[in-house]
Image: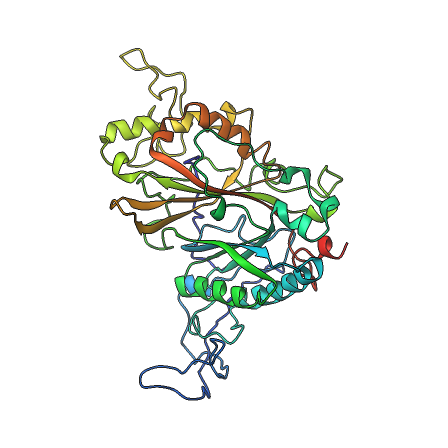
Length: 430
């Protein structure tokens, strides 16, 4: 589990720009109109779970949204949203299996519905009759769609299945639950407001109809924008600064590492501009971790807990000196430290864009917290990104003693939808 995760964007509070370069400042504010019958202190819901009706209105003069609510992310573009988007405060991951008898036609209709709804929600508009996020702006909402290995057999599209989507190899430390792994379709939802994220989850799930059924669903969170005095790299549930060494968009080879090229690569043409998402539910054994002294924790990671700087000194962004030895004659950054083993230069240059959410799903029967990381990483080819790094970690990462990989999935995420397109149209209508 690479701890160096996606660095928070220092400009999280600024308004995103649309493809024309103009700020997108949209509001989901609506005034509730006729709602059928209303009970004392609440709204009467219809048989299908929607409100009987409502009327839209512009926000009243002077009632500007806070910057967190005002920020919108474009739905269309060369790549799907939710990949290079700055980390969001709330996330939902959900996988679906197509229903028996459903195939390519039903899948295409579903992706068409989903894309239209995601576009509306990301613009800050209400969709599907829901009033859950009635007063909120777009809140950096993103919706991302992907296809699992099994999707292609069930839709008769085996010849269009990318080789990069072949199942991941087994790792010795895996303790995977098949019921919470893989799936035909995968949806990632992120937002900076919990109600906006939940509203998108419920709206998309209702629109599935009889075409598919939920295979598994997971909920996550990150630090809320503005929670710290100044923008900072986030922390995970172990308290570690988590996101220092992610690839940066400013690097010349960033797109080559993260996105499938459109110049005749080994991938099918419908994957141009797309990426491959590896999704792992990684439970952190927090009771065991918290028994370690601060010094011991820092040696496991190879970085200071206070500020994320390498144990060899400097600041968070300082390159670690992997050849530095202490007075005891041992490497200052131990040979099995997570930060050493997971570095690209220790793995033949393998790199991936890590963009996770933390999770906490209560406590098990022994009172042990069921908490950890919903690990999500993006790469142009998982065999050159995730797999070599995880193999190295599997052989000798000091952190392995304190984590457990409990579920896994690999999904082909096509490029973004062009104007008038739905996500996956180039595959499903090929």
